[in-house]
Image 1 (cartoon, rainbow, N blue to C red):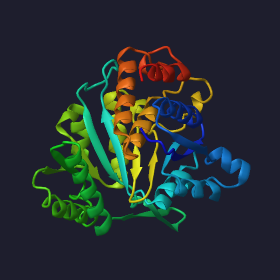
Image 2: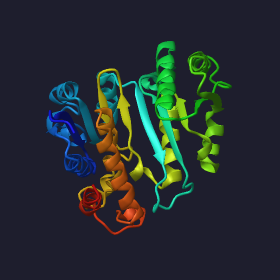
Image 3: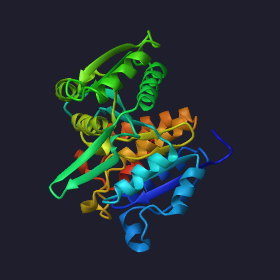
Image 4: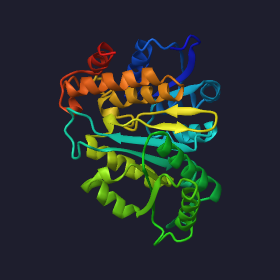
Length: 330
C-alpha cells in the first residue's frame, strides 16, 4: 500500500452526488490506502449561490489532483462535466457493464466495456439557429481523435485479456463522419493482429445488446452513440446504480457514477452507492493500487450477492448501511 497520500479532488455536485461521493470516499479510506481528499463546489446549487457552475478554484483543484472523484450535477451538466472533461484532457470515457450475482437482470453473464470518444461528435456543442424555426447541430469527427480512441480501445482489450473490439457506427447514413471513424479504426486494428476486430451499425448493436450482450467484449464508438449505448447496457444488468465510469487522458483522470443527480431522492438515504464505490475501484486501479481495487470489487460483489443493498435493487438498506456492508467485507 502507498505511504504518500494520493491527492484526490472530490466534487460532490448536486442531488445525491454528495451522498454517493461520501460513500466512495469512506470505502477508499477503509482500504488502508493513504488519501488526501479535498472537496470543491460545482453544479446547480453552486451556480445559484455564486453565479458560476464551475468556479475557477474547482477547476484549478481538479487540475492539481492526481484524480477527481465526481458525484453528479443537474441542469448545469454541460457547463460542469463537459467542461471538466475538456479542461482535463480526458479523451476516453470507459463505461463498464457487468452483471452481479444477487441482482436481478436480463443477462447475468454480461461483462463488457464501452469505450466512448469524449471530446467531439455532436457533443462538441456547435449549434446554430438559422431562423426562429430552424436549428442546426454540427457533428465533428476528426482523424486524430478517432485514431486515438481506437488505439485506446485496443490497448485496453489487450491489457485486460479481451479478444474482440467492435467499432460501432452509422456509416450507411453518416457516410463522411462515420466513414472517417471506421477508416481510422481499421487502420489501428491492423496493428493489433492478436485482437479480433468487427464493425456494427449502432441500431443493430443496440438490438443485440438487449438480446445477447455477451457477444460483445469491448465496444468503441463516438460520443453520442457511446452515451446512449452505455445506458442501454446498464439496463441489461439491473440499472444505472451499478455503473461507474472513468474519464481518462494523458495527465488527468476523472471518475463519476453514470446515474445522475436524482433530485427526487436526494437527502433521503435512498441513493445506491454501488456505482460510486465502483468508481473508487477504478480510481484505485488508475493510481496503481491494484490489490486494493480488487478488494473493493470483491467486497461489493459479496454485499450484492447477500442482498445487502438499497431499495432500487430490491433491498432494504439505506445509503449508509449499504456502504457499511461493503466496508465490513474489506
